[in-house]
Length: 131
Image (cartoon, rainbow, N blue to C red; front, side, top):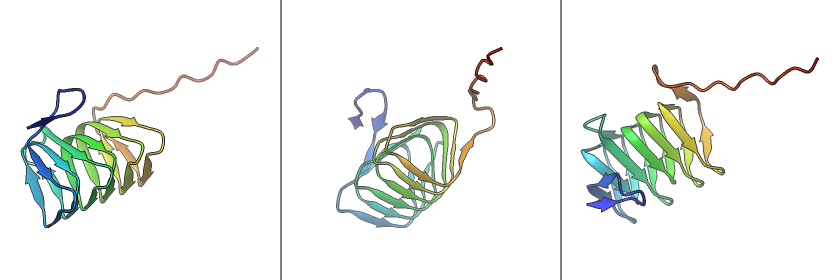
C-alpha cells in the first residue's frame, strides 16, 4: 500500500513504468498507473476508487472513478464522481465529467468540461458598474 503526499489516499495496485496492459482494468481502492493501458479503467466501487496517472503514463480508453490525480495522458471520456486534480503535465483528449475540479497551469483538455448534476457551481459575480 502506498500513500500520496497528503497521506489520505491509498494506492493498492500499480501498473509500473514500462508495462503495457491491453484490455479493460477494474480496480478496488487505489490504482497508480506509470505505464500504458489500452482499454477502459474503471473503479469497481465508484464511491471509493482513486486513480493516479503519472507523468509518463498513458490511458487509451474510458476512465471512471471517484478521485483522479492526472499528470499523464488520457485519450477517452472521463467520469469522476468526486474530485479531479489535473497537474501541470496532464493531457486529456475527451470529455471530462466531474464534481470538483482543480486544474494547474499547463494542463490541457481537448474536449468538454461537464459538471455532474448536483455539483456545486460557483458563478462569478458581475463586475460593479460605474455610474
